[in-house]
Amino acid sequence: MSHLIKFCFLSLLFAVTCSANSLSADSTVSTNTVSLKVEQTSLTLAEIVSEQNKNYDMMHNGRGDVVGSILDLSTTQTKEMRIVVFFAFDGQDSITMCQPWDFGTVIPDRWNKQTDWSRSSISIISNGNLTYNLPVKKNSTDKPELKTVTVNSKIKEANKFSLRFHPKLLGDMLPSLNELFRNECGCLITKQVESDKRETIVVDFSASDKSFSGLRFVLDPQKAYLAESIIEYRNGMVSKSAKITIGQLPNKLFIPAKMECYVFDENQKAILNENWYYRFIEIDKGVPALELSGITTGLVELDSIVDTKSQGVRDTTGKNPKIPTTAPQILNKHDADL
Image 1 (spheres, rainbow, N blue to C red):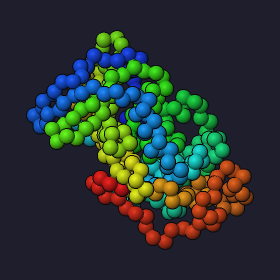
Image 2: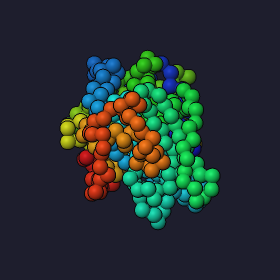
Image 3: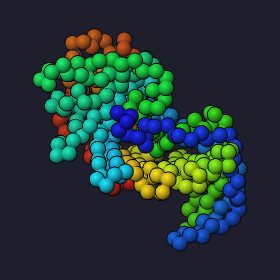
Image 4: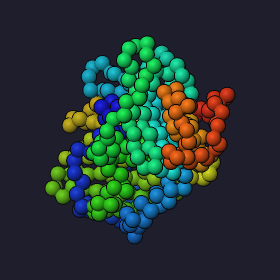
């Protein structure tokens, strides 16, 4: 599915190197809508990453549906594709299923055997072992069969979204702040204070080749330092931008709830637009072990699952979960909080 979801699946094309840029601190920047005061801060990238990880590490298990709309704006005729990502994880074990959603059809459902799973990619991780399955049909009337595909490390790195979805992926670009920190990339960190006293933390990375290329993360210190916007720029021009709505779960943890992304060409014309939001999500409420096995697709027979424990799947909500009789919580696309 990576060729369909260019913004989220492709790694950044420019190399962010380990040097800080030359933005000045302790200055005031005025715009047409708001006045920003830029101040120095003693906050380090290590402290920021630690706060983000602390928030996400408290999500021990979860399940949900993520809906994505991808608009190709590069031609005179706008083309749109939709996709639903079904995911569940419990510790290191997980399942991620990416399913196209055709226009004029009911949204795909993980328990609906009428869903054509032959068009999906299904990634199951058990005991740290990854099996990437592409359902195939020999004939149009045949039941799809799972064909396991070998996945190398490069594919794993470039396709995190489809191989093991985690809520944090909805609020990050590649590379993430975590990756930049691990690679010891230098950055400039400042605090912005708006006229209404609201504070944000800005982390700037820039290339060392004087190409005016780099990355800017704007973080909310009141929400586990999660990013509310990310901008990539090349040669002094914005090439990619993402606006993220941060929601709060009932257990007080923060999560990227929605993301809107744009990709621009060298003339600053938008050529790609993506919108992602949760149809429903549950965190730390337990995940049926059988759901992690992929049985919800109807492609895995119950008789073939002898012992879910031996497959490394923790049984968090009982060995025989019942198929839901009521619809899951439906989230309004425009709601900010979860």
